[in-house]
Length: 324
Image (cartoon, rainbow, N blue to C red; front, side, top):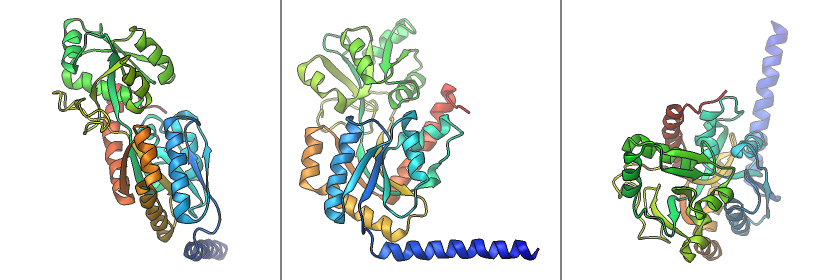
Protein backbone atom coordinates (compact mmCIF):
# COMPACT_ATOMS: atom_id res chain seq x y z
CA UNK A 1 0.00 0.00 0.00
CA UNK A 2 2.85 2.40 0.89
CA UNK A 3 4.54 1.65 -2.45
CA UNK A 4 1.24 2.35 -4.26
CA UNK A 5 0.84 5.73 -2.47
CA UNK A 6 4.45 6.69 -3.15
CA UNK A 7 4.01 5.80 -6.82
CA UNK A 8 0.80 7.83 -7.03
CA UNK A 9 2.48 10.84 -5.40
CA UNK A 10 5.41 10.62 -7.85
CA UNK A 11 3.01 10.46 -10.82
CA UNK A 12 1.03 13.46 -9.50
CA UNK A 13 4.22 15.43 -8.89
CA UNK A 14 5.48 14.57 -12.38
CA UNK A 15 2.25 15.79 -13.94
CA UNK A 16 2.38 19.00 -11.88
CA UNK A 17 5.98 19.69 -12.87
CA UNK A 18 5.18 19.06 -16.56
CA UNK A 19 2.22 21.45 -16.34
CA UNK A 20 4.35 24.14 -14.69
CA UNK A 21 7.06 23.67 -17.32
CA UNK A 22 4.53 24.12 -20.13
CA UNK A 23 3.09 27.22 -18.46
CA UNK A 24 6.55 28.74 -18.09
CA UNK A 25 7.39 27.83 -21.67
CA UNK A 26 4.22 29.55 -22.92
CA UNK A 27 5.45 32.92 -21.62
CA UNK A 28 8.32 33.14 -24.15
CA UNK A 29 6.58 31.29 -27.00
CA UNK A 30 7.71 30.94 -29.71
CA UNK A 31 11.45 30.90 -29.11
CA UNK A 32 12.43 28.54 -31.94
CA UNK A 33 11.14 27.39 -35.37
CA UNK A 34 7.83 25.53 -35.66
CA UNK A 35 6.77 22.54 -37.73
CA UNK A 36 3.43 22.30 -39.56
CA UNK A 37 2.41 18.84 -40.77
CA UNK A 38 0.23 18.57 -43.88
CA UNK A 39 -1.33 15.08 -43.88
CA UNK A 40 -1.53 14.84 -47.67
CA UNK A 41 0.97 14.73 -50.53
CA UNK A 42 3.14 17.65 -51.60
CA UNK A 43 2.07 19.71 -54.59
CA UNK A 44 -1.67 19.52 -54.07
CA UNK A 45 -4.03 22.34 -53.21
CA UNK A 46 -3.89 21.66 -49.46
CA UNK A 47 -0.10 21.62 -49.49
CA UNK A 48 0.11 24.92 -51.36
CA UNK A 49 -2.44 26.46 -49.01
CA UNK A 50 -0.49 25.29 -45.97
CA UNK A 51 2.79 26.66 -47.30
CA UNK A 52 1.33 30.07 -48.03
CA UNK A 53 -0.35 30.21 -44.63
CA UNK A 54 2.80 29.05 -42.83
CA UNK A 55 4.84 31.77 -44.52
CA UNK A 56 2.32 34.42 -43.46
CA UNK A 57 2.05 33.09 -39.88
CA UNK A 58 5.84 33.03 -39.57
CA UNK A 59 5.93 36.76 -40.27
CA UNK A 60 3.64 37.40 -37.30
CA UNK A 61 5.27 34.88 -34.95
CA UNK A 62 8.84 35.93 -35.71
CA UNK A 63 9.90 32.30 -36.22
CA UNK A 64 10.06 30.15 -39.34
CA UNK A 65 7.52 27.37 -39.88
CA UNK A 66 8.70 24.27 -41.74
CA UNK A 67 5.91 22.54 -43.68
CA UNK A 68 6.29 18.75 -43.64
CA UNK A 69 4.13 16.37 -45.67
CA UNK A 70 3.14 13.26 -43.73
CA UNK A 71 0.66 11.72 -46.16
CA UNK A 72 -1.09 8.36 -46.27
CA UNK A 73 -4.24 6.60 -45.04
CA UNK A 74 -6.59 9.47 -45.93
CA UNK A 75 -4.75 11.93 -43.70
CA UNK A 76 -4.80 9.80 -40.56
CA UNK A 77 -1.03 9.13 -40.46
CA UNK A 78 -0.21 12.82 -40.22
CA UNK A 79 -2.91 13.57 -37.66
CA UNK A 80 -1.76 10.64 -35.51
CA UNK A 81 1.74 12.14 -35.47
CA UNK A 82 0.41 15.52 -34.34
CA UNK A 83 -1.87 13.99 -31.71
CA UNK A 84 1.17 12.23 -30.24
CA UNK A 85 3.49 15.26 -30.42
CA UNK A 86 4.62 17.24 -27.40
CA UNK A 87 1.88 19.78 -26.57
CA UNK A 88 4.14 22.81 -26.67
CA UNK A 89 2.89 24.59 -29.80
CA UNK A 90 5.88 23.67 -31.96
CA UNK A 91 4.15 20.88 -33.88
CA UNK A 92 0.92 21.79 -35.69
CA UNK A 93 -1.35 20.27 -38.32
CA UNK A 94 -2.84 22.01 -41.33
CA UNK A 95 -5.66 19.75 -42.42
CA UNK A 96 -9.14 19.46 -43.83
CA UNK A 97 -11.73 18.33 -41.32
CA UNK A 98 -12.29 14.96 -43.02
CA UNK A 99 -9.55 12.98 -41.19
CA UNK A 100 -11.20 14.22 -37.97
CA UNK A 101 -14.90 14.22 -38.76
CA UNK A 102 -15.15 11.24 -41.11
CA UNK A 103 -12.27 8.78 -40.73
CA UNK A 104 -12.82 8.00 -37.01
CA UNK A 105 -16.27 6.68 -37.99
CA UNK A 106 -14.79 4.56 -40.77
CA UNK A 107 -11.77 3.34 -38.78
CA UNK A 108 -12.64 2.62 -35.17
CA UNK A 109 -9.04 1.61 -34.42
CA UNK A 110 -7.61 5.10 -34.99
CA UNK A 111 -5.30 6.33 -32.24
CA UNK A 112 -6.95 9.76 -32.04
CA UNK A 113 -10.40 11.33 -31.74
CA UNK A 114 -11.96 14.80 -31.64
CA UNK A 115 -10.56 15.38 -28.14
CA UNK A 116 -6.96 14.68 -29.19
CA UNK A 117 -6.44 18.24 -30.46
CA UNK A 118 -6.72 21.93 -29.68
CA UNK A 119 -8.52 23.81 -32.43
CA UNK A 120 -6.43 26.86 -33.36
CA UNK A 121 -8.32 28.38 -36.29
CA UNK A 122 -10.40 27.53 -39.32
CA UNK A 123 -8.82 28.88 -42.51
CA UNK A 124 -10.60 27.67 -45.63
CA UNK A 125 -13.63 26.11 -47.26
CA UNK A 126 -13.22 23.50 -49.98
CA UNK A 127 -16.21 23.71 -52.28
CA UNK A 128 -17.06 20.56 -54.22
CA UNK A 129 -19.32 20.55 -57.24
CA UNK A 130 -21.04 18.43 -59.83
CA UNK A 131 -19.14 18.87 -63.10
CA UNK A 132 -20.14 17.61 -66.55
CA UNK A 133 -18.38 17.64 -69.94
CA UNK A 134 -18.85 20.81 -71.94
CA UNK A 135 -21.14 19.10 -74.46
CA UNK A 136 -23.18 17.16 -71.90
CA UNK A 137 -26.98 17.37 -72.29
CA UNK A 138 -27.22 17.88 -68.52
CA UNK A 139 -27.85 21.54 -67.73
CA UNK A 140 -29.05 21.16 -64.13
CA UNK A 141 -29.31 18.68 -61.27
CA UNK A 142 -32.96 18.25 -62.28
CA UNK A 143 -31.82 16.85 -65.65
CA UNK A 144 -29.56 14.32 -63.93
CA UNK A 145 -32.28 13.22 -61.51
CA UNK A 146 -34.85 12.90 -64.31
CA UNK A 147 -32.51 10.59 -66.23
CA UNK A 148 -31.82 8.56 -63.08
CA UNK A 149 -35.54 8.11 -62.43
CA UNK A 150 -36.19 6.91 -65.97
CA UNK A 151 -33.47 4.27 -65.75
CA UNK A 152 -32.18 3.58 -62.21
CA UNK A 153 -28.41 3.06 -62.18
CA UNK A 154 -27.93 4.35 -65.73
CA UNK A 155 -26.29 7.61 -64.65
CA UNK A 156 -22.77 6.97 -63.41
CA UNK A 157 -20.51 9.41 -61.63
CA UNK A 158 -16.89 9.50 -60.58
CA UNK A 159 -15.20 10.59 -57.36
CA UNK A 160 -11.70 10.49 -55.91
CA UNK A 161 -12.63 7.45 -53.84
CA UNK A 162 -15.07 5.60 -51.60
CA UNK A 163 -15.83 7.58 -48.45
CA UNK A 164 -14.60 10.84 -49.97
CA UNK A 165 -16.56 14.06 -49.48
CA UNK A 166 -18.01 13.87 -53.03
CA UNK A 167 -19.05 10.25 -52.51
CA UNK A 168 -20.77 11.01 -49.20
CA UNK A 169 -22.46 14.09 -50.65
CA UNK A 170 -23.74 12.31 -53.75
CA UNK A 171 -25.06 9.41 -51.69
CA UNK A 172 -27.02 12.01 -49.72
CA UNK A 173 -28.46 13.25 -53.03
CA UNK A 174 -29.56 9.68 -53.81
CA UNK A 175 -31.18 9.28 -50.40
CA UNK A 176 -32.90 12.67 -50.50
CA UNK A 177 -34.11 12.50 -54.12
CA UNK A 178 -34.83 8.74 -53.93
CA UNK A 179 -32.82 7.87 -57.03
CA UNK A 180 -30.11 5.31 -57.78
CA UNK A 181 -26.82 6.44 -59.28
CA UNK A 182 -23.79 4.28 -60.07
CA UNK A 183 -20.66 5.30 -58.18
CA UNK A 184 -17.29 4.80 -59.90
CA UNK A 185 -14.51 5.41 -57.35
CA UNK A 186 -11.01 6.34 -58.55
CA UNK A 187 -7.65 6.67 -56.84
CA UNK A 188 -7.63 10.44 -56.97
CA UNK A 189 -9.10 13.16 -59.15
CA UNK A 190 -6.67 12.87 -62.09
CA UNK A 191 -7.82 9.48 -63.45
CA UNK A 192 -11.45 10.38 -62.79
CA UNK A 193 -11.11 13.60 -64.79
CA UNK A 194 -9.67 11.69 -67.75
CA UNK A 195 -12.82 9.58 -67.96
CA UNK A 196 -15.08 12.57 -67.35
CA UNK A 197 -13.45 14.58 -70.14
CA UNK A 198 -13.82 11.54 -72.41
CA UNK A 199 -17.54 11.44 -71.51
CA UNK A 200 -17.33 7.95 -70.04
CA UNK A 201 -19.00 9.35 -66.91
CA UNK A 202 -22.32 11.14 -66.60
CA UNK A 203 -20.77 13.57 -64.14
CA UNK A 204 -17.90 14.01 -61.76
CA UNK A 205 -18.06 15.19 -58.16
CA UNK A 206 -14.89 17.19 -57.70
CA UNK A 207 -13.17 20.06 -55.90
CA UNK A 208 -13.86 23.25 -57.86
CA UNK A 209 -10.39 24.73 -57.40
CA UNK A 210 -8.80 21.63 -58.95
CA UNK A 211 -10.56 22.01 -62.32
CA UNK A 212 -10.28 25.75 -62.94
CA UNK A 213 -8.37 25.25 -66.21
CA UNK A 214 -10.99 22.85 -67.59
CA UNK A 215 -13.77 25.26 -66.61
CA UNK A 216 -12.05 28.24 -68.20
CA UNK A 217 -11.52 26.29 -71.44
CA UNK A 218 -15.13 25.11 -71.56
CA UNK A 219 -14.12 21.44 -71.39
CA UNK A 220 -16.16 21.11 -68.19
CA UNK A 221 -19.22 22.88 -66.81
CA UNK A 222 -20.49 23.17 -63.25
CA UNK A 223 -24.06 22.08 -62.45
CA UNK A 224 -24.28 22.74 -58.69
CA UNK A 225 -22.09 22.96 -55.59
CA UNK A 226 -22.39 20.85 -52.45
CA UNK A 227 -21.73 23.80 -50.12
CA UNK A 228 -24.24 26.01 -48.32
CA UNK A 229 -23.10 29.02 -50.35
CA UNK A 230 -22.05 29.64 -53.94
CA UNK A 231 -18.43 29.63 -54.98
CA UNK A 232 -17.31 33.28 -55.22
CA UNK A 233 -15.45 32.59 -58.47
CA UNK A 234 -18.54 31.00 -60.05
CA UNK A 235 -21.47 33.02 -58.71
CA UNK A 236 -23.90 31.79 -61.38
CA UNK A 237 -23.66 28.16 -60.23
CA UNK A 238 -26.37 27.32 -57.66
CA UNK A 239 -26.02 25.30 -54.51
CA UNK A 240 -27.81 21.97 -54.40
CA UNK A 241 -30.27 23.47 -51.93
CA UNK A 242 -31.04 26.31 -54.32
CA UNK A 243 -31.53 23.75 -57.09
CA UNK A 244 -34.17 21.92 -55.05
CA UNK A 245 -32.07 19.18 -53.42
CA UNK A 246 -31.60 19.94 -49.70
CA UNK A 247 -28.11 18.48 -49.38
CA UNK A 248 -24.99 20.18 -48.00
CA UNK A 249 -21.68 18.35 -47.70
CA UNK A 250 -19.25 20.65 -45.95
CA UNK A 251 -15.51 20.55 -46.47
CA UNK A 252 -13.33 22.95 -44.52
CA UNK A 253 -10.11 22.94 -42.59
CA UNK A 254 -7.54 24.77 -40.59
CA UNK A 255 -4.85 24.53 -37.94
CA UNK A 256 -4.70 22.06 -35.03
CA UNK A 257 -2.35 21.59 -32.09
CA UNK A 258 -2.02 18.60 -29.75
CA UNK A 259 -4.38 18.37 -26.80
CA UNK A 260 -3.03 19.94 -23.59
CA UNK A 261 -1.24 22.71 -25.53
CA UNK A 262 -1.39 25.67 -23.09
CA UNK A 263 -4.16 28.23 -23.58
CA UNK A 264 -1.66 31.07 -23.95
CA UNK A 265 0.12 29.26 -26.79
CA UNK A 266 -3.15 28.46 -28.57
CA UNK A 267 -4.24 32.10 -28.25
CA UNK A 268 -0.91 33.29 -29.71
CA UNK A 269 -1.27 30.89 -32.63
CA UNK A 270 -4.88 31.92 -33.24
CA UNK A 271 -3.87 35.58 -33.41
CA UNK A 272 -1.06 34.75 -35.83
CA UNK A 273 -3.47 32.76 -37.96
CA UNK A 274 -5.97 35.63 -38.02
CA UNK A 275 -3.25 38.07 -39.13
CA UNK A 276 -1.91 35.64 -41.74
CA UNK A 277 -5.29 35.02 -43.35
CA UNK A 278 -5.92 38.77 -43.55
CA UNK A 279 -2.52 39.55 -45.05
CA UNK A 280 -2.52 40.89 -48.63
CA UNK A 281 -0.03 38.26 -49.80
CA UNK A 282 -2.13 35.33 -48.58
CA UNK A 283 -5.34 36.89 -49.91
CA UNK A 284 -3.73 37.41 -53.33
CA UNK A 285 -2.61 33.78 -53.44
CA UNK A 286 -6.08 32.53 -52.47
CA UNK A 287 -7.80 34.59 -55.15
CA UNK A 288 -5.41 33.31 -57.82
CA UNK A 289 -5.98 29.70 -56.71
CA UNK A 290 -9.80 30.02 -56.43
CA UNK A 291 -9.37 29.01 -52.79
CA UNK A 292 -12.26 30.12 -50.58
CA UNK A 293 -10.92 31.74 -47.40
CA UNK A 294 -13.09 31.41 -44.31
CA UNK A 295 -11.31 32.36 -41.10
CA UNK A 296 -12.99 31.27 -37.85
CA UNK A 297 -11.52 31.36 -34.33
CA UNK A 298 -10.66 28.09 -32.66
CA UNK A 299 -13.91 27.68 -30.72
CA UNK A 300 -15.95 28.06 -33.90
CA UNK A 301 -13.65 25.70 -35.79
CA UNK A 302 -14.13 23.07 -33.10
CA UNK A 303 -17.91 23.52 -33.12
CA UNK A 304 -17.97 23.09 -36.92
CA UNK A 305 -15.84 19.95 -36.77
CA UNK A 306 -18.04 18.34 -34.12
CA UNK A 307 -21.22 19.11 -36.06
CA UNK A 308 -19.66 17.80 -39.26
CA UNK A 309 -18.65 14.63 -37.41
CA UNK A 310 -22.26 14.09 -36.32
CA UNK A 311 -23.56 14.49 -39.88
CA UNK A 312 -20.90 12.31 -41.47
CA UNK A 313 -21.49 9.56 -38.91
CA UNK A 314 -25.07 9.22 -40.11
CA UNK A 315 -24.08 9.05 -43.79
CA UNK A 316 -21.25 6.56 -43.17
CA UNK A 317 -23.55 4.33 -41.15
CA UNK A 318 -26.22 4.44 -43.86
CA UNK A 319 -23.66 3.44 -46.49
CA UNK A 320 -22.26 0.63 -44.34
CA UNK A 321 -18.74 2.08 -44.47
CA UNK A 322 -17.91 1.72 -40.78
CA UNK A 323 -14.75 -0.30 -40.38
CA UNK A 324 -12.83 -2.08 -37.63
